[in-house]
Length: 337
Image (cartoon, rainbow, N blue to C red):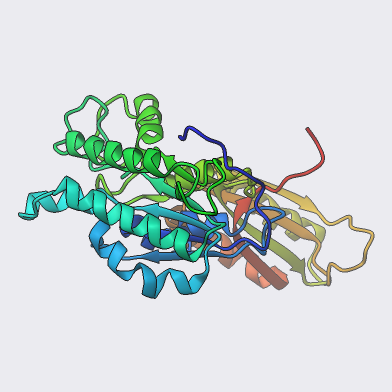
């Protein structure tokens, strides 16, 4: 992704700002990559900020930098721009490379003037289309803008040459997000689909794309993200039978519940058990069933299915209390290897 590794470990005293266009803006949403990075293990207090505008080009970002970014006092600034500089050509905007170079240099200079000890990461534009055979209509221009950003980074590598802060260290780095994405797509898009692998429409990141970006940046910074959700929905049902219900009726209800997994095809898995906890906190619940679904739509089909409704009519007269919890399953690290 870059010619360098991140120069030092992050600390909770750092302040990281992601500045850019649609990708930076979407990164701050509930499932966005910035939101995921905020959940890094051992760095939960690390402040991440997102400053994104969907239509921004490099010249716009340079103009709003002093007002919107400097007040956040970023010790690490990640800039994700360039895609709109290319995209807007299809809408009559002329991509002026020299003007874009000047805007990039202006932003770099402004950042180090205000954060002389900071670290600046300039990212390549990402994707306009997900085919890897060179047939996306704007591939050539995206590569040209990526090369331009890389050239500016080479000019400034090590800080601002000639300044008192210059140390020869890679204080400004180039993150070639585009190259890493294309390598990923070569493996995961053999059918040369124009979108729907990492993006919704060829540009906007989808759920997989946000996870891809979060993992990529976490690896670069040396952060450990929580284990991802397993993408299965658990539907857990606790049963407390009325004291007067006979063992035969209890067995009938339990067997009917167990049979739902075979009778309703959207149920991915079903398991059951009887409480044997020594803690005494079961509140009278004696039996539990856990059903697994691959989507909320499958769960909703199950809940409204005629066979399930038939079971509910059988079970409810025998039950004193029912507790139901649904959740998306998420694994977490343990000491096991």
